[in-house]
Length: 346
Image 1 (cartoon, rainbow, N blue to C red):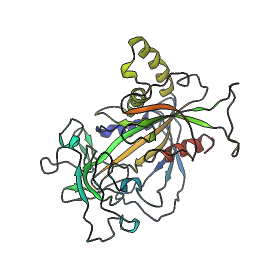
Image 2: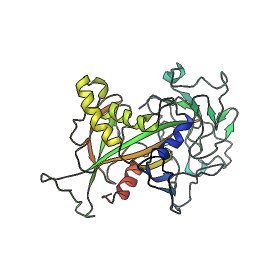
Image 3: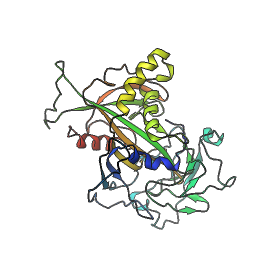
Image 4: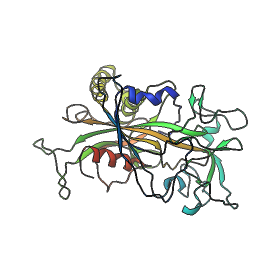
């Protein structure tokens, strides 16, 4: 979704309390964080048992990993939905720690954001946000740790993007989202799982939407409303974008809700929590998300529901999961994690 809403602090513990199984590809959790650009992916996988606050208590797996080059899509030359071009930033100049006196980023905030809709902040100078903390109902903390603030503006923890301001994003600093990854096994006419010819592993399919704003295929996610539990965000965004539940009749909504609730009440596999390499990111505003995989193991939950695009989706369909499928932002990384955790083809 393009609209940006906020995410309150208590949501951060909701995944644990509600018993999501975690296989988290997460960025650093130290007091201060900066994205390494040349550090190889390395980690120690650790696990701990969640307190029994829910019947689906499972192990949490944490994996620290970062891409070899930070936010490639967040440095796209032409900013989405505009004629504004970013100041070119080479790989060796991305880190804020690298001195670059000639860096002159373009300042751009979309006209739709400057109109001060409910989901957006005022401009800097007209209010005093409390960065790195819970600021009223707005959560300005980051999944990646403490970010720097210079001249009253927060700095993107993954470095320079070639664009200052907020672009299409509403919040200064982190803009929190949730991405529901709904999967099923691909099956043949006899109902048997389809195996990939090369890997000999079963093929997963996920519900994908084609975004209206850029035409790319993506997970049907969106922003978390104020005070909303993240599980409800995941379910709401999926319903709005993949099933167009907003236009369904009351009787149809009841049938949809029954199957969706059954799926989203199952243990979810959290596959990512952290910074998102999103083309909307700027030096002062960026996307972060929690991505959770809900799997229809038997094929009798959402698998049989008629898909209908809604909200910000142009099209919606089941798509085979695999490395050859290009996806929006960091969504390929999320799907790869889900596939490997479920021992499926990638």
